[in-house]
Image (cartoon, rainbow, N blue to C red; front, side, top):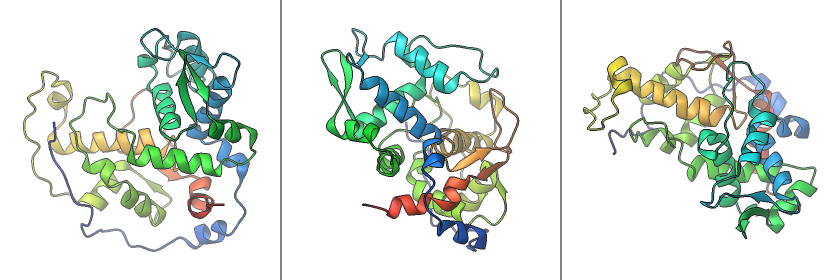
Length: 270
C-alpha cells in the first residue's frame, strides 16, 4: 500500500561544499583490493565461484537456494559476529543470499539451468578477471533501481526513499562533517515538516504502536538506505557498537572507497 511520497527537490540546510581531501583522493588509482572487500562484491564473488562448480548451486524443488549453499554463504560472509547467534538453514531466513542472487540474475551473471544456478559467459568473465569495476557498477545499478529495498521489512511503501537514491548519494558526497546519521540526512533532504502518516489498515501494527509517524518514517529510511544499501555497497561504515538493532541516531562515516573510488568506477566504462 502506498502511504506517502515526497519530492527530492526541497531546499537543503547542508552546504554543497566538497571536502578537498576527497578531491585529492579521487585522483588516485582505484584500489582493487578495497573494491573486493566491499560486502556486496564479496558476496557476489562467493556466489559466482559457487555457481562455477561442476553442479552449480543446487536449488530446492520449489526453486529456492539449497540448504548447503545458504549455510556456507552465512558461515563465510555473515556469521562472524557473536551479535547474531542464529544460523539460517533456508533461503527465506537469509535475505542477503536472496538479494545477491537476484542482483546477479538481473545483471545476467547467472541463470537457472536444470535445477541449479549456473554462470553465464558474463559471469565466467567476471570470476576470471582481476578487475571488479564492471561487476560493482552492474550490482549498484540493479540494487539502486531494480531491487526492492523494502523487501520483507513490513514498513509501508514509502517509495520516495528508494526513488531519491541518486540525490541521497550526491548529498553524502558533499556532507560537511566526518560523520552522518540517518536522522540528519533524512531531515536535510526531506525536511522536518511532514504530513501525518495515515493509519495503517494492516493487521501488523507492532511498529506503529511504539513509534510516532515521523520516527517510524525515519526508522524505515535508516533500515532501507543506510543498512540495506549504503553499508553493503561500501558507501558508509557503521561506527557504533555491533548489535542486533541499530538506531537512526547511530553515527556513520563515508568509506575510503566512497571517497576515492566510487565516482571513478561509475565513470569508467572501459
